[in-house]
Image (cartoon, rainbow, N blue to C red; front, side, top):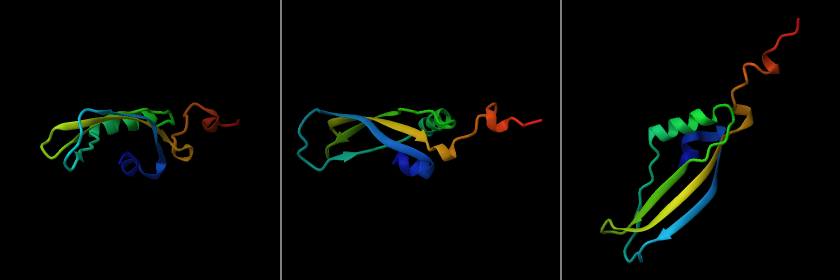
Length: 98
């Protein structure tokens, strides 16, 4: 989902994941995944210059009655691809020869 939001300018990879199985799922199971605007803003701000970001998400898997049957913890690796990173305004590319 995050890869779809950020588009081709970013690497979005799974870094770590774990599942805590709480109880058996005996009906259809559902999960709601959500990325808030605040989370997205933090990711964008921390990766604009090419820095790595490791956002973490917890997803609750629920049964038909709405009871949590498992909890999925995911840590992602997010980084802007080199060709889309903002240039360092102080670096050699901005120096002029006189």
